[in-house]
Image (tube, rainbow, N blue to C red; front, top):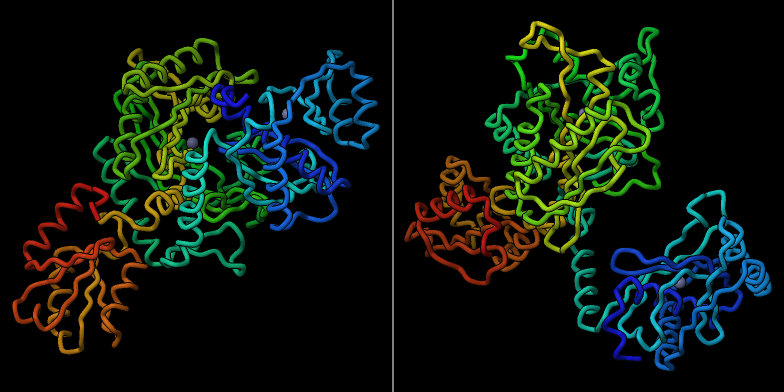
Length: 583
Ligand SMILES: [Zn+2]
Ligand SMILES: [Zn+2]
């Protein structure tokens, strides 16, 4: 059977590993009930019902038993049996979750099962032909989960694992996991003093510390500069508005569960804004608009508040208050293709500046329940396709996955650990222009309704920052680094020279820090490296005398002696290139 191994796809292999794990668990802990064991990205899990949670030693035992079972190369056999027979069989084994699954199956088709040795699982398949095909696997961790994800249901013990075609792939994956742990943005956020979340303020609400705020400010500056260049205007809008506005927009109906509860101000109800769109529409409506004014592009770092259950909050990635790099474009129907193509170009330009050059792109089309005419949907979907093809982006169509008010493009970026992050989205909207009854005067002298495009490029600054921290592993490229250069004098006697150098660098716009503590130079260097500061400049008597700088890059062991002009030239060049630096 071994030669068959190669032709199994990873999903089949991983799902078979889940069965193998269930078999091992039933042998070792016979009182455990089995539920389901699906494949997930890079691995699999299986949910078990058991009073005791599994501990790490249990996982070791289970994994060892899995290896024994794999070695015996048990054949895996598929059987089909009538529903009643399947019910009786799993009922007889006391596997109540399995009988519940069978009872939930609508069709009268026979039920398929897979058997390996004494273990039989209810399953659609496919599976590998024998347990010997499962060779390169590892159990990773456990968590609790509710049956069918519902907290009113019994709590289950979930075991996660991973399986690969060979040990080399498995090893590479485990290394990647290790690296991801080291790069966890919550861990680095603390170590590099970038941001925090406190109980006093409340979960999901982010405090940006000076160093995190530096990075955010640089991102915002770059973003604004490019948006002005591309014909956008910047606007600001308040963080709260009357409930009536959200009734007009429809959010009070279809988005109510995500909106913070209303507050009363002078007898009127207000809510924190969950979106920026209605504000930009109001700005559009503040004038009579002519076709000559269009397209109008309003951009804003708009902070929104959305209610998420505390259980799903996660660092900077799932929060309750976040800032969208939002913009709304108002255009004539004839301009929509060109506008979307420009939006995509801008998105790619900005994402590339952060080192993201591989994407997954999805075009979502009309869902079953939607507003707008067939003609509108067709025009908009064609415009999105046109823009995608013009930019040469490969994309997948997600049929019926559009928002009810229009089709959209979603872009995921691949980070340095080959993980994908959903960031950009471009949506065409027929709904809000209608609800707010916005119009412009067309060439024919008549009132016409503009097309509205919503777009966010980074999605939210919080999430994007979390992604960047992990992508760079906290070692921000020079243009983004909160501190670009740190000066490290060897003794007190170099302090006057340190001040002079610091002054010159700061005057040239370089973000410079000084470590004037009375510590050994080796210690100062190690700390600067832990802070991932791109350049360390060691200053001793030799440097003072020759008026030079001993420069060392954060990941290098080499020190070069240069003069101030050469150093500034190097810094300026690297900042301008936005390169990751070759340190
Ligand atoms: Zn299965
Ligand atoms: Zn919007």
